[in-house]
Image 1 (cartoon, helix red, strand yellow):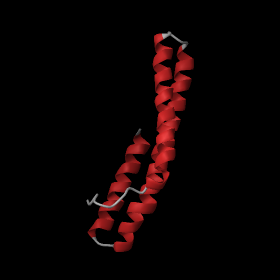
Image 2: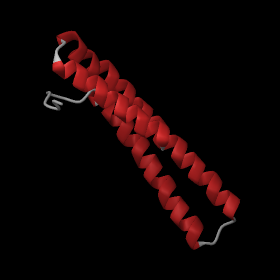
Image 3: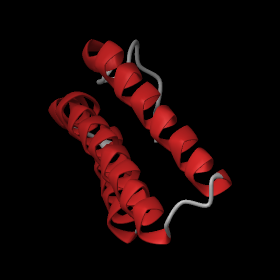
Image 4: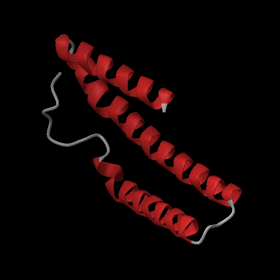
Length: 99
């Protein structure tokens, strides 16, 4: 499976992804504070759910970019690299579904 290419598919969304990840990082720090402050369990769980949804959105954005860029390029070229990229994408989707 070849990973050698000039840039990842998400490069055009890089700034937005970094900003989103920084917000998630802040959410996780907030969760740590909530635990330190012994916040109500349901409130902590609500914030865990929000952080999880935010990470899922990052994952879906990356997956979409991967499919539209890396997988589509490999499919246009054809051959074993195309099959490998499809297998790789299927495995990534399976990991996301299980998580």
